[in-house]
Amino acid sequence: MVHLMTLPAHIHVLERGWLSSNNIVFLDPDCPTVVDTGYGTHADQTLALVRQALQGRPLKRILNTHLHSDHAGGNALLQQHYECLTVIPPGLADAVTEWDPDRLSYAPTGQHCPQFRHDAVMTPGDTIELGGDDWQVLGAPGHDNDMVMLWCERHGILISADALWQNGFGVIFPEIVGESGFAEQQATLDLIGQLDPRLVIPGHGAPFTNVKAALDAAQSRIKWLAADPKRNADNALKALLAFKLLAARQMSVNDIAELFRHSAITHKVIAAYYPVAPELMAQVAAEQMVKLGLARREGDMLSALA
Ligand SMILES: [Zn+2]
Image (tube, rainbow, N blue to C red; front, side):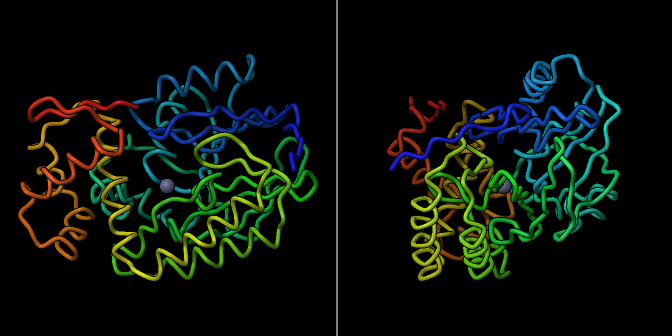
């Protein structure tokens, strides 16, 4: 069945690729707002797109669903250009104040995020007014145990961040670092099921209305991952390398080995599941990027295809 539903006119989804998250612009007359700001190296493009979507209005507020580098990488540049309030989930507020790249995941993932400030937090249970509607802040642990989603009951719209995409959800990173994440992701999916959204605006990819199909697939996937944690670890390795390759455009096999040596997350995964030298693992991973259609290889050099 095809469900036809269009977004209210004051909500503009700037659909980006995988390196940058989507940016959701609310043309609120009093408080023009953007939810999530993309990756740092795309910040100029984010600023241009947000400026265009705002049609001359000044940006007054940034909301971040979570602080991964692909969701908060445009914060700094937007803060330079606009006098805007930046609101983040409470879990890592101290880490932002102290600017701790380890706790903020940028160091252990080998990713980059220009330093930004935050002005306020949004805590699960809070209600935020956006474009004249109430949006509820909901905790969405699993991919990131500090992540939140935004839910508008009136329109039946969920901003799901990386908790639910049309096809899957983000890597369950807490499990990689020895914390619980599978049970949390399961509970987050159950919560989305109870909300029964008419439309989901995901962190990556186009908004979608076939929510039940996406949820069913996500439910089977989380059970499949939880049954063998190596599956999640493999995904983490693949996702982090693909991300790095997208950002760098080109990487040598030696660059990959360097990433595996220096990123704490990939290091952990390799130590736990692939007891081989980083150089050998880099060869295996390079082949995999080619097999997945993400890269072209000439000699020892990989070039991103996406
Ligand atoms: Zn994320």
